[in-house]
Length: 277
Image (cartoon, rainbow, N blue to C red; front, side, top):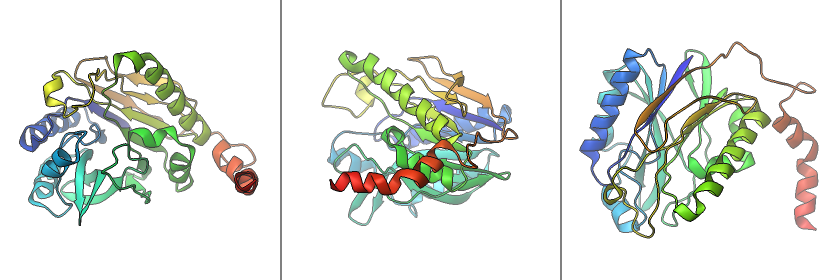
């Protein structure tokens, strides 16, 4: 299966502009015969660090904005994964929509939401393209063991993880190293392909981030089930990562289970016990 990620820049609060960039990415994906294409976290709305701006750009899953997203997806063959700030009643969620040929296949909401004004998602849906099951996590979600484990146990062979990073220069190297270590572990533990789909910030005034100066450096990549990088983007520029993943190879198993599944089966009760001590 050929998969891809668009490491593009999102402009905060500028839906029309961002949707046009999605159109550009999908067109290129179609030309390259990509089957699944992802975009960064909150790409359609931007990812502001204030609730006021987040609410101003947010929309619902049955809104005119979403209908435009679905209409765009109807014109292209690749399955689309793209993020937005979602209004759900009075609450805000950091959500990704998965769409194919005009159909809303479903949504996933970030389960380790970093912004305090976002509610935490607790559903982990599985999607399918041409018989291949895949799931979605968002940015910080990939730093925790259980979300990836849940998706893998449900049959996901690929996990797409859209990101939005704007990191202080003082913490840049440590962030870079930690994120790669987390993702290598998730891929290896669960014997899945892991797609780190980051953004890039070229114009900080468009980022929506007001509380710190930083660098949106990119570094998107596809890791194989052993935690090795198969393809990665250039850094600090817009780029498209394309990768052919071999899903005929059987996942690594021990005692009939992945490392993560066996570890949970054997030790979860002991973990619960230890937490109470």
